[in-house]
Image (cartoon, rainbow, N blue to C red):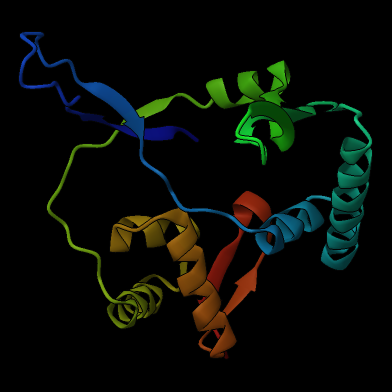
Length: 197
């Protein structure tokens, strides 16, 4: 497990003589939604995906309720949430300026333990390629060809095979499961996909 990153040129204004210094940027592997996270939690526990979703919905409601009453919330291993304000200058009917306070947002400060967990992942430099994204139809054909040859496939192999993100690979595999071409066996890191009988 590692964070993939690439080096990118930092824009420098034309009137500056600074040397262009590259900066590192994480290469996103996709955005995982609530449904996916519920499934992962369910697979690594004795709680059903529906129950996990119910707990998260309750957590969302009560966090919103408590934050709106002026409380801050600290969730062990996750982080610290607190409501924030902003000031706004308005003009009254007499043309005088006055400052008003408005509720702005919710700030989040990541827990130290979560930061450390991410830092332990390590880094993997990904060299830029000119590989174009394949349309889903071609990606699915390549996945099925791989299964035909090797009898099974996993998420990582799908990502390498189609040069795609984790999110896209999982979506492709789900598409093949929904169309009854593949079935899922195992769970977690041991999840494999084989041809449906």
